[in-house]
Length: 210
Image 1 (cartoon, rainbow, N blue to C red):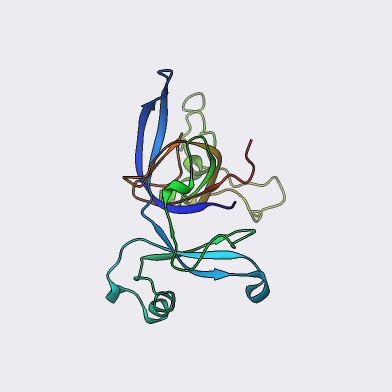
Image 2 (image 1 turned 120 degrees about the vertical axis):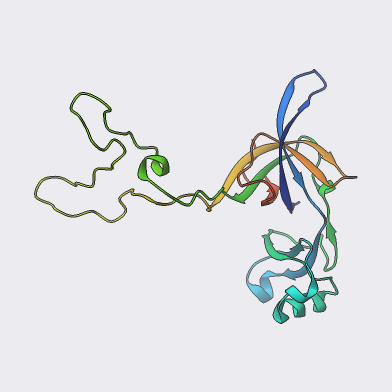
């Protein structure tokens, strides 16, 4: 069965296994996701669930989205997200997806936007090597060489240079669900998850489970 849920990354902590081993975990708060639309292959060309997540005041939702929520009979939410599934027959419009769809020991993929770092230099952005600090008296130690060889005189397309770093979608595969707390809507995932604190994270069943 296909499973996925949207949540908020609260941060990292650690828990102990039954054998007393310390396990670093990321805590994800998953308030119920509400299904507002079910897409099928006959009408839309693919199978997917459209879910709503996050609290928001109704007057901050534009009219097209208000129509989507009104048609589904669901209170307006902050964001809409599609989950592409092979089979959506187990779901219905208006159904809530809660954290208990996952169990302890499940393998999941975590998808989120990485932390934005703004405009950075090429050394920080691409992990390049800086120039020597001694032996020759370099005046610029973190300057990137742009030369492409004698006689060419141009910069080729795709060259790694300074620019905007971070803020892109990152997927971490095959993470283990250490604990599911249904009362507090929490999922504890082993290891680190992309994105800043309070950022939105999608957890889905691992597509390449090992």
